[in-house]
Structure formats: C-alpha cells, structure tokens
Length: 318
Image 1: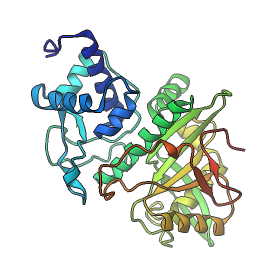
Image 2 (image 1 turned 60 degrees about the vertical axis):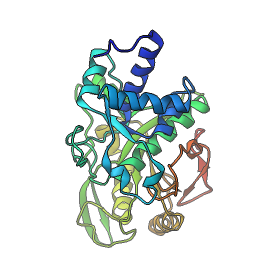
Image 3 (image 1 turned 60 degrees about the horizontal axis):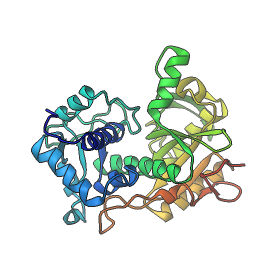
Image 4 (image 1 turned 120 degrees about the vertical axis):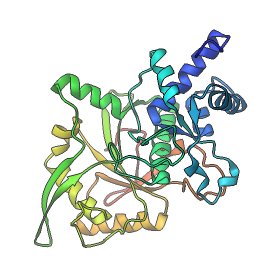
C-alpha cells in the first residue's frame, strides 16, 4: 500500500500526518499545517491531503463540513479511513489520543458521532473541541510549554493504578435545599507542564446553546448552572484525583458568544466566588465567514474568572 511513495522524507511526512489524524480524529488543512511546525508549505499540505484521499484512500471528507454558512470556503476537514488506520498501524504509528471523538463508520458519508467517548452528536461542537485543543498545543509549542494529552494522562494512570481513568466523575451536593447527584463527563482533558516543572490540568466544557441558568438539574447538569454545581463538588472533594488521575484541576469554559460567557461568569460569581472556573469566548468554528484559523493566543490571552483578576494560562497561575 505504501510502496507508491518514493522518498524517505515523503514517507516521514506521511507518518507525521497519520499521527496527527490519529491524535485528533479530524483536522482542517490550516490546523494540520500549523501542527506540522513548518516542515512543509500550505500548498503541499493541500496536495498531500488530496493524494492521500483520492489516490490512496487514506483520508475521507465528512460531509457535515458543508452544513454551515461558509461551506463555499472549502474547509478541507479530513479524517482517517480504515485503510488509513491500517497503514498507520503498519508503520507503527500509535500516538496518545488528544481528542476522544469517534465516528460510527469512518467510510460512510452519514458522519454521525458515537457517544462512546464524548457525549455529542453535533459535528461543529466536536470541531470546536478539536480546534480548541489543537490551538492549545500550537500555543504551548510556541512558548516552550509541554502539552500533556488526554492519552498521556490515561497511560500514566494505567501504569500507576492498573486500570483506566473513569470519565464519569460522580458528585453529590446541595443547591437551594435540594440534593443534587449525578456524574460529569468532560468535553476534553489536558495538562500543561511549565518551564519551572510545575504542571496544571484542565477539563473543558465547550458550551453550545444550552441554557445558562436552567433550574432543572435532573439531566446531570446540562445547563451551566448544573455544571457549575457539579464541578464545585468534584473539585472541593478532589474526586477528580481518583477518577481522572490528575493532582489538580481547573475548568475551562468556552463558548462562541462573549455575552453568554459573561452571563456564565456572573452566574458562577453569584453562587460563590471561585478561581477554578475560567471563562472565554472563542471563534465560532461554523459561521466565521471563512475557514477558521488556529487561535494559539488562547494560551496567552486573558481568561475571565468568577473572582479576582483575569489570568492567562501560559504561566503558572497564582
């Protein structure tokens, strides 16, 4: 299958591309280019994707990418076919996963997401998660910070505890005299090791159009109010240490609307000031009017908190 590639350098680039698709699941051309660290040019990436898709059958383009306002800008989102995964295995490419988002059948054009790892069937919600994580990794490289993927966290936990992490983190708390119990499952999980050797870990909630302050908490916190209440209990009791295997935890709350982000922050402040919720509006991955670009400034820009001053994530917070 792989004999068509003539040069060793071309084979290595193919390996690098396969590795990135295995790590993220789906990537746009411009994000793939940024993650390649300048090894090749942008036009090369587009030509390479075309060859891997049309000539070798290693990539496919999910049709959901056309269901957006700016589809005519050609996002060029790709994922690996089964053949692509087989080639990666043949080449010994088996990287730790960054974005645990799976597709029911990668060779079908229906493109529905399974709920095995991340509870979402929304393609653009999934792309928001992927692009956010990719932007964090790109930013970390630019500032000499080590990006710790979810896959690496899971492997460390397995080596130490002999079992996998449990992403269904339970909580039991009281709100307005009502006992609230359930489980929270993250949208994403990663860590950063700073230049001083200290590490911080984050779970992320990529908020869609869920209500911010819906008082109905029966669905394990689908609104931000429910998530706020759940995470307060999880962090206060340090339940995340047993279930996720990380020594510390903060919650990154991203949304495409600045006004909604402010609403969430104000709601959390009313419940009780805290430093472990960080709020930020990110570019809308579906309706930008052009193909979304990586936003590595997510690491250096200020994040709002429900108390104290805004902070940046690129250095160890106080």
